[in-house]
Amino acid sequence: MSVVLGIDLGGTALKWAVRPPDATARDLIAHGSMPTGADRTAIVAAMTDLVHRVDVEHGRVHAVGVGVPGHVDRATGVVRFLPNVSGDWGGFPLGAALRRDTGRPITVLNDARAFCLAELTMGAARGRRDALFLTLGTGVGGGVAVGGRLLVGSDDRLGEIGHLTYDRSGPRCGCGNRGCLELYASGPALVRGLRERTGRRPDSPRAVVAAADAGDGPAAEVLARAGRAIGETLASLCAVLPAEVAVIGGGVAAGLPALRPHIERALAERAEFIGPVAVVAAALGPMAGALGAALAASSHPDEPSGRAATGRSHRADEPERRST
Ligand SMILES: [Zn+2]
Image (cartoon, rainbow, N blue to C red; front, side, top):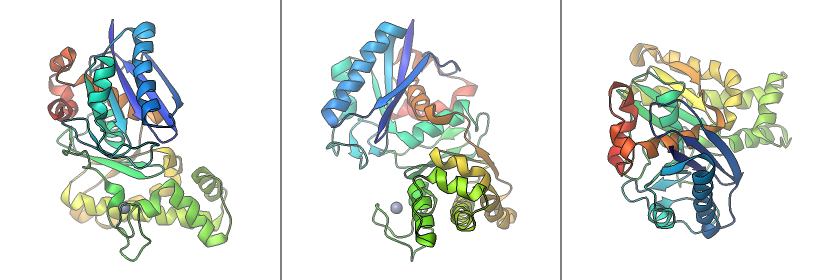
């Protein structure tokens, strides 16, 4: 049996998922996670070891997809910008290095786009044509599907919804801009928001959500501001990119019940122009990124089963197939 391996490289954890090569299959053969290595050499070695381990334990790995939290050249697999993973990554040919070390076709893509591909193909947006995606975590990532296809740009930046300006007079963002959505809706933004209002130091975004759920006023205000920022940003996007559904995922999405009324209100205020937009929770959980990376690998042009994966229900994979 042959399989595809999807890897989701994060700043602290490397998650992986093993799937059948057929992009239409819904099975997850195996999955796991390990701490992210201390530097680039260790991380590449860990990925190579993982390929060989999966070969032995689950079947020959025919293709590998790697989602990374940054910008990558989709055509070459060269990393452009990867600020939150240890090591010197700018300009590193990750795709070529892994191909050399493993002998397998490698697809490198942005981790948020991997999440979107999974949710579009087999998750909350399955069967939808026009969708926007947001992942709320350490940062805010996203993606755009139009006509059932995930839109893909050359450096995999298409979908950086977290870096749209929400408040031009807001604080400085890591991207160089001011007042990006990410500064209001990410996990660190929730923690910082409660600290600024109360002097308290919640130990996680989840603690802010729990406080709001328990009736804490300042925590509820922080979530209201985040929800408002998300809703207004999505509403603006929908002026250009009509969407029937907005899929919200990521670690902070546990707060969706508290965020949702504020998101929906902002969308409703513009409903006459943008039409109805359903706000739904992501369906695939924390393995979505690894699953999406595996789905992208299924569509790699060097992967025989990728070429076979055509047909009405595979529209979501086509941009990936063209991309490398
Ligand atoms: Zn920014």
